[in-house]
Length: 273
Image (cartoon, rainbow, N blue to C red; front, top):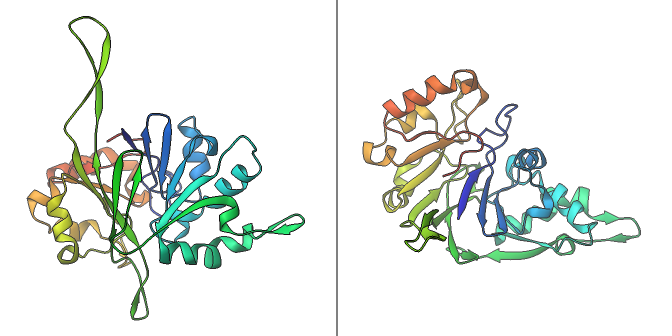
């Protein structure tokens, strides 16, 4: 199993691509979110829409769904490409078509279509779980944005990460060995709300944490200054991502400081877990 950061930047990054991720098991490749710059992020990894079998959508912001039109049209008009499975909480999927994708995808010359014409849809309930190959991914609702008094649906993921490596048997041929699995909590976009997600922090071996580095905090992402206040045993498990371009030119120094502050560090574009 390979887990790779295709990008690690915030929604408006010009340098690091938006923070979307790739999970690969064998020849199957699964995207966690699909931001508007996904075609460039895939190209940089010598990949394209042809290589993607599944996509999970955490919520409806463009840096998480803006690349779905690219996947949809390319797959639809390529007879050699089977439908991509599109996965998400039912509220996210229901709004995805009507509020985000319908304008661009509803009409193909001579007919009208819907989301099911482009993707195989898997809608999940609260506390839902889905499998990619033999790995279970569990949805965790997080607080990202409030729509008046209502919480906009947004869901992180919890899964077990199995890292494999090559070893050589006594008889000579190379074999694959499997390391002990680690439980990963990927917050996706999330406010600083440690009381609401402290149990998931504690359960995890690795945390991939939304981390804002802006000089002007938005309030809808966990800012670095607030993450600093977390207990050391939590920070020691935490990779920081979804950061602004303002740290790019001094990334080495900022990453070294993050390690001094107790974090695992800032995850870099292309990083393999």
